[in-house]
Structure formats: structure tokens, C-alpha cells
Length: 466
Image (tube, rainbow, N blue to C red; front, side, top):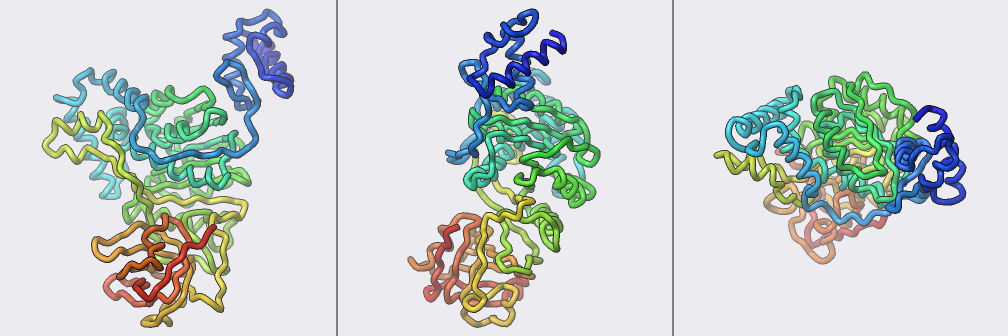
């Protein structure tokens, strides 16, 4: 097919899109040489992002709906079978059907041991092909789940359109990509661009073959530092990559410049102390002190003129995944089998926007409630305050939750010493919920260098609708 024919197909599609569903068997009649409908269909698929078209089950093409995505997300129980099978096919192609056993199994387990040790030591990991396969075995399921939980919040806030241009910076082996593709409804169009310079891109490209007909992927085999963004993106993902960059704040700031005015930059990091605090440090550099970006979620800045400067260690936790077959098979032949099973879904995240929007738009009344910036003057006193819940319980004893109003310079925790029907909202509220505390006792915890807000039978805790 020549360029004139391609141009004619696109021109006809551009005209018909406003009239009726585009049928490839109709368009071929108006193109010189009458190319086969299958060829017309392939040109329409290649041009779908340019023309804002989605392909329907009946083989026709229609414009992308203008309304935002509606979510019916109910959580992730397991990595779906098609993705399990696709990864297992890669392992069989590389090592044969006995890949979990013998030398190949031991080599994969050693790669997992090595990159875990490097991670906890703060060292970078070199991703050759075998390391990329080992990384997919260990991390594909939890990364797949994590991105969907974060995207669900944006969808519930009606901030994800059905026509999305996405840039995935440091896409790795494809956990976030597959999670995004499966999260989107069938009538959404996604022009997906991945940046991945390492051998992980080979695994990524193979797994992307499983994505749907309206998910259009392109993999750019270059680094985050050297990639030149082309135009604006509705969603920029930076999942589990910032801690691997030499200057993550500068790189994230550079990609903010490529964000659409109503788009979201979603940064995700593991829940451990160093990477979580590091993520919050980047967020604050980009969202506070006069920056054009705002922290949309999950952290808050309730008091005008104030921004948090505490450690910022905050992470969400979801239900464990079912153990995927490839992890189970690799673990069965090892003495320390549990070391190769990873089904925890625990993560830190930050959503930045350029339109000034925040998930929680609320300004407390300074005449009625205390701000955390002033906690020192309230030690040993009972006060009223308003704060976001930014953790699940962090204690095996009395339930302990990190809270924040965005003004604090040191960590604040709510300690539930006696649960009542009037304060149960503290334990029951979701991560990120806004809570009102009435008659809470402020104490200084010298051992932890933090403030404890003691919630007892004299305290009332209510959730504030947002």
C-alpha cells in the first residue's frame, strides 16, 4: 500500500467519523485500487490515536467517548491468567519446560537474591535479559496491582478521560503497563509510550502483545534523562524508578513540563522507609515553595501558607495477592522458598497536577481547631484538630496511625488507646480520609521524636466527607 492510499483511508475515516461507524469494508470502495478490508483495518488501527478512534467488537471504528472513565474496580486478587501464561511462555522459550529446576532455576533464584540485596543496600541493578526475567517473576504481580489501586482513585475523581496519552517513565518489565491496560474499559483509547533503556524492554514488548486492540503501545529504548517528550501527556507514570535515578527531582520536574494542563503525574515507590521518604522529598520539591505543581493526593496542605516538613513516611496497604504459579514453582525447589514469593501490595504514591486541584479541598477554622505546626504549645492538653489518615495501623499494640494536616515539621501519630462508637472512625477510615478529632490529648514521644495524639474514651473522631 502506498502513501496516497493510506492518506485516502485516513481522510475518508476522518469524514465518516462524524456521520456513522467506520466500516473498513465500506472505505475500501472509495480508495484507488480498492485495498483489501483487512489492510484498511490495519491502517485504521495504526491511525487510531491520531484520529481519536476506538475499534468495536463488530470491527467498526467510532470516535472515543468524551466522558471520563467510570470505575467498577473491586481490587486485585491475582495476576490474570493471560499474563501468567505470557510470562511462563517467555521462561519456557528461554530455558525449556523445566525452567524452575536445575541450573536455570538456581540462576533465576540467584538473580532475585542479588537484586534484592542491591536494593536494600541502595545500589543500582544492571538489567540483563536474565535479570529482567527474574525481576518479572518477583515483581510483575505486585506492580500490576499497585498501579490499578492508584488509578482507581483518579477514576473515581473523574480525572481519567477515555482518550488517554500516557508516558510510562522507566516502564521496566511491564507491571504498570499491564495494570493500566486492564484497568481501562473497552471503549477507552490509550496511546501508550514506554521509556525503558535496559533489557527489561524485551520482556515488556513481549508482554504488551497481550493488551487490547485500543491500547496502542510504543517502547522507546532510551533513558529517562535523555528521552525528548513529544507533545503533552494526560498521564505520566513514574513507577518504582525515581530511587534509581541520579537526580530524581530534576528528572521528575522535566517531565512535569510535558504534562497536559489537566493531566496527572503519578509517582509510585516501594513502601520501605528510604524510598517512601525519598518520594515525599521529591513531591515537596515540586509541589511546595511556589512551584506550579500541587500535590493532589494522598498528602494534604490544609492550612494556607504551610507545607509539611516532617519525615513523610507514608504508605498504603492492600490485600495480598494469590501466589502466581511461576513464583510457586520457583519456590518449591528451594530451601528458602518464601524468599521468592512476593504477594504483598504495599506502596507509597504521589499524584501531582498543574491545575491547582487537590483531592481534599478543605481549610480548617483557626478559631476552632489547632494546627499541627503548633503542637508544641499544646503538649499535655486536649485539643480539636483536623487531619488526613496516612497509614494503616503501624503497631502490634494499641492501633497507631500516621496523620497529617500539612503544617507539621515533625511526625504526628494518632494512638487509639480505647475504641468507642464515637471514635471508631479512626480505625475504620480508609487511607487518605479526612478526619476531625475532638478532645484529643497531645503528648510528646521522646523515644520516637514525634507527637502522639491520644484517642481515648473522651475523644470523638468523625470522618469529614470530601
